[in-house]
Length: 267
Image 1 (cartoon, rainbow, N blue to C red):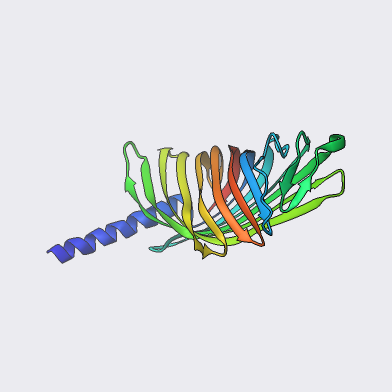
Image 2: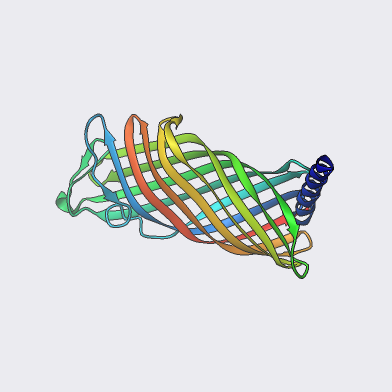
């Protein structure tokens, strides 16, 4: 009898998972525009030369919110869950007149003669996630889905600083990182959904090609769906507190956060 109960339980879980996939669509794609501000500090040492602690706003001049573009493609498979690919890209630029000398990646930028520094931070990430879980019948026709996330995120970040005196230094962070996380999704009505998810990891130094520390990527979104089309609004927080050792030593404690808008299709 207990074996029969276990089999029935597994069958119900599989049916719930399939039912959730059917509601969301087995194949979906969406585009997102994220209006993100950056805050925090950055320090870059090089060849034994210690770097200055640089505030991204007051020192580097990265005061403006910037638009990030993101693309998601999702494939759902019965009993196996969903596989989601994400591509994110955006660039911060800033200019600031130095009030004191700073050192970045082994180069000293002088504050003499109203010297200005010009900063570019180009951020790209590629993410592949496996989403697995189940859906349960809710109240008044709603449904709730929850489960886990596991996958891989690849960072491609380039930070360049130059000044009016001809100095230029560029530092790259390029590393793949395994991630784990969780999600929850609920239907407020037949056409209105709320979804929250977070994924990230505390990174050991020997796991991600010189990258260590911790980061997380958290979002919450409200989407309205009509037929195969949906659109929504949400909020995202990306926390990046890491050290990267590859030629230059990068120490970063940075947050990216802000509202996003998204549109998509689901079949």
